[in-house]
Length: 192
Image 1 (tube, helix red, strand yellow):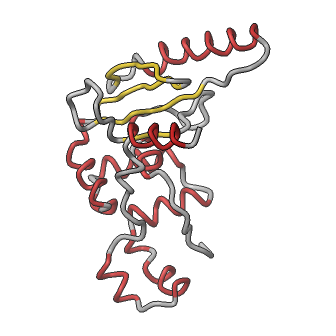
Image 2 (cartoon, helix red, strand yellow; image 1 turned 30 degrees about the horizontal axis):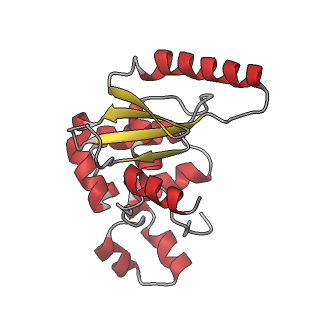
Image 3 (cartoon, one colour; image 1 turned 120 degrees about the vertical axis):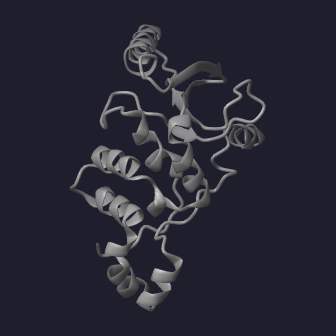
């Protein structure tokens, strides 16, 4: 690792989406994920909302084929998922909601930004999703097992090792406003 990733990224997409057990590289990937959907009829607060955009094309046949392929994907990969909760349409998005109450304790750690305190099984699932090669894999390992990376981060940031030991986490907390689907939709509507 030669540098630190400094831009904000949607934390639920990298820390929670892998918990669904969906293989990396599958044809349809959510454009975004959220841990909250205010004003929805979903009672559980331990959810992951996956927002899928089905692109509109000028070719009607192509659009129909893509929608059919997406519906097959939903039936085969999402609705059969043991964590599947429900499916919703809003604007031009397909929203698939998953119940993550099985990972309740890890979700609380996630909200607090304490990724290094995830359970061992959750850490293993995340690391298996990203694999053991490549930059993202290295970043994820540094977030889940920060103590292995304190020396590297200390050099890159030019700060004492002891400060990193004190802070413990090497990834910032999730921005809970950006992790709320309703607030994101409102922002999008304001800029139309």
